[in-house]
Image (cartoon, rainbow, N blue to C red; front, side, top):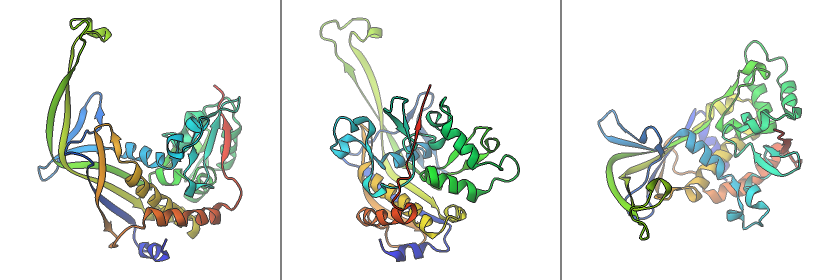
Length: 324
C-alpha cells in the first residue's frame, strides 16, 4: 500500500467514505426490521422519505464478521465449521479465544458483540483472566482514566476493541469506568424510498382448513420491500486513533485494519438478508479530498508485515476458559 496514503491523512480528524449501492438483481430490497417498530422509516430535514437499512450496531458486527473466516469461506474441514480462522492478512493480531473447560472452542472477542466485555470472558468462574485485567488497571480505581494506559491494555489483549469500542462495566475494573467509543462506525440508509407491498400464501393441499397455530392449513402472509437510492457511510476517527498515543506503527495498523474491514465488507458482506443483496456502484471519499481508497488487494499485501512490526513473531492470542 502506498505510504503516501497515510501522509495524505495527516492533519485530518476523520476519514469519511460514502458508497453508493444498488440491488444486485432487480430494484427491490428488504430493510432491517424491529419487532416493535417494523422498518425504520423517517423523514429527512428536506422532506425526503428515508429508510435505515443497517444501524451502527449492526454494521459493527458485520465489519468484525468479515475478519473471521468460517469453513464455508476457507474450504476447511468439519472441525473448523464452528471454529473457523482469522482472515489470513490479520494473522498475528491480538484477540481473546474462549474455550470450554474441556478445551472445546466456544467463541472469541472478535465475534462477541461486546468484545472484551463478553460474559463468556468476564463472567466465567475461572477468574484467571479477570484478575489479570484487574492487575493491568490497578491504580485507576479513582481519578481520571488514562486513555493511553487503557488503549495499551486493549492493544495487548484485543486490538479490535480499539476500532469498534468497548465498555468494561465491571466495578472491579477501575470502578466500571473503562470505556472507548467506536473509532470506526458505519451505517446504511436509503433516500427517496417507495414501499413495495406484496404477499403470498403457504399452501396445505391436504388440510387447507387445518389448525394454522400448529402450521396446518392455508396461511396467507404479506411482505413489505422498498425501492430507493442506497448509500453506505463509513467514518474513521483518525483523531481518536492518534489520541491513543501508541506509536506510528500501531496507528498505521489500526487504519489499515479499518480499510481492510471496509473493503472486505464491500466485496463479501453485502448480502445483508435474503432479499437484500447489494453491489457497489461508486466509492466516494468525502474527507479528506482523495481520489480513491487503497484496494483490498493492496491492503491484504501490506497488512502482514505491519502486524509483525507491531506484534513480532510471538502469538498474541490469549486463551481463556469459560466455566458456567
